[in-house]
Length: 89
Image 1 (tube, rainbow, N blue to C red):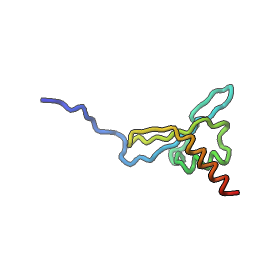
Image 2: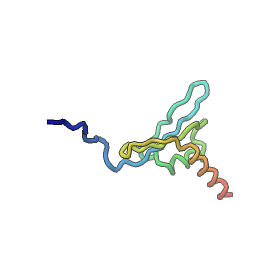
Image 3: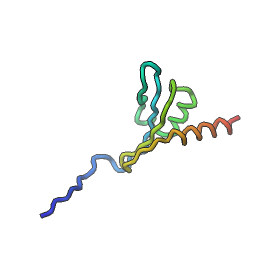
Image 4: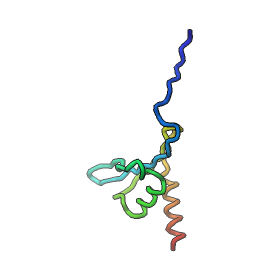
């Protein structure tokens, strides 16, 4: 009898997309900033970046474990922040 290689996922099916920011701390190095699970959404990350919550952000990465993808979204986030500053002035 042939055995299947499929195994059930332990990841919940409706996981949201998570956004993390890599921050440069100079001589101390760089690290992914600690984020509450509820505050790892795109809007919160954009607001925190605009408010100066990061020392020197170098990258924003989005991932969704239930959909099995990840992507560097730094340019998209930067464009959105630029758009918000332009439209608010």
